[in-house]
Length: 439
Ligand code: ATP
Ligand code: MG
Ligand code: MG
Ligand code: MG
Image 1 (cartoon, rainbow, N blue to C red):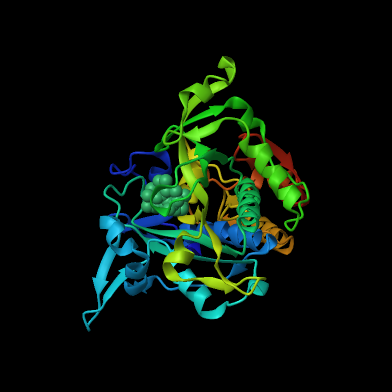
Image 2 (image 1 turned 60 degrees about the vertical axis):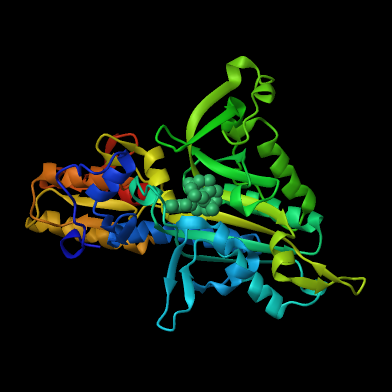
């Protein structure tokens, strides 16, 4: 992409309504524009990162054997009345009525809808296990939408639902989700720690939240500092293996790590004092096993091996796709701007032409652009007639991992400058070597 042809409405001023770094930086970098409280338009660069995160989530769900589909944003209230949650959900649910006066709602989550699909089409235990998921916009009329996309009213979420014959099978599904979530967050350059949490309105005893440690997080968390040394890494895992998935769960959830809702002072005191930590965290996902709560309420039964109708064991599992942009930026920025992890960066490399209009510099930039593209990368070429200082500031703000600076002086010696956004270190290299280093 050439910056002169792109739409990147960078703000010079720091927006006063933004209280935290990620919100400020997303506005300044022209990624989002508020349309009304907690509702945003996703401008091209914000949309690009959103799609990258979505792709990682899809990839890892499919790797775990979970099946993508898509349910609507607007739902009929009937199913919610059947499950009993229409009244329970309260003011967070946006209720709408259509021209015929029928009660509708903008879905805050999808347990009812998916259970209805299941009960309509699945009758036998032989069709289990089954895990379906979708990535779709949700609406929750939050009392205090704030921090930009972190607590929106309209937000993008991956929600998955497992249907199993037994509690044992459903707990395997729970563990598969834990593993796939660990992998997803790591691919985004994030450490998200599974912590024992509270079931809340969805219910159930088995639930973990995934938290990214950050001072601006809304949750208070307590943990053994050893949990921050854990990482899934690039190990192989067989998602069909109950033992392997259970092993990962034990590895990642045995040490003390809880949110304030489940915090237990006595158990925490068993952690050696020098390893006890209290901090703030951002909830970027949550997994639940809730047994037969919805399948009983909605009559989602299958014929079991004994021929008798049996309510299925279920769980639901969410990732805050749009919130993750904020969480990633909270975890990775400096006073100049965003520092994108490689896995989610909107462009792989910026090209800064120090002397736009100079034949040699222009030709060198065009060649670099072509070489990077041929290597399967997406460069962003700042080909505007601007001062070098302004171009550097924009590149620092939007946070691409690499910048290649091209100017007539370097070209005389056959070199360009390659700068790492994270370390700030620059090296002079031939254009070919620079492309190799970035790729
Ligand atoms: P919170 O405690 O922050 O209100 P939640 O526990 O109500 O979140 P879940 O029902 O667990 O949310 O939904 C799954 C995920 O969706 C959350 O872990 C979070 O990442 C994301 N999410 C929830 N509410 C919002 C929101 N208002 N804006 C953006 N993302 C959200
Ligand atoms: Mg909530
Ligand atoms: Mg929560
Ligand atoms: Mg939650």
